[in-house]
Image 1: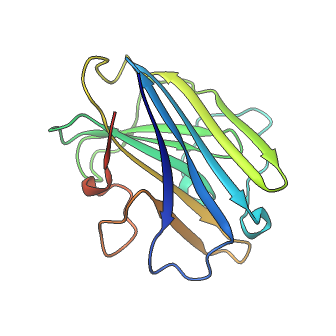
Image 2: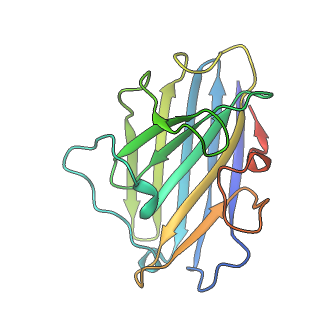
Length: 179
């Protein structure tokens, strides 16, 4: 079993940052993966989507407040992008290479995203079995990020690291955790 805490940092050029902190926990055992994002602080500084009546697979979740993580096999070009919205909506994409060949991952047809809200904290959690897409007996490289949308409409970009001159969650140098 592998468990790691993480902290996300804003992109250095982002202005008008909300008064929040972002972090969480990542856990893996075999093909089972659990991740929890924790956003704490002045949540009024962030637009948080309302709970969906029926959470579903949706595109363009990254255009609003959205947590994301990326998984890849070391030494392979392809990777998976997971989008988890505070609404409970979700999506999983498989990409053949850097921002190439994006398609919804057909092997994953549902994700149970758990969302807990308090006045000063939002947590978004997922626990899932990824045996259909990733080998249980090999390491996975991980990038973790989050987009925060502000009430005035601008977004800030948070990640474990920012290896490019522009916010770029897909940049392979951002996959800095191995589990």
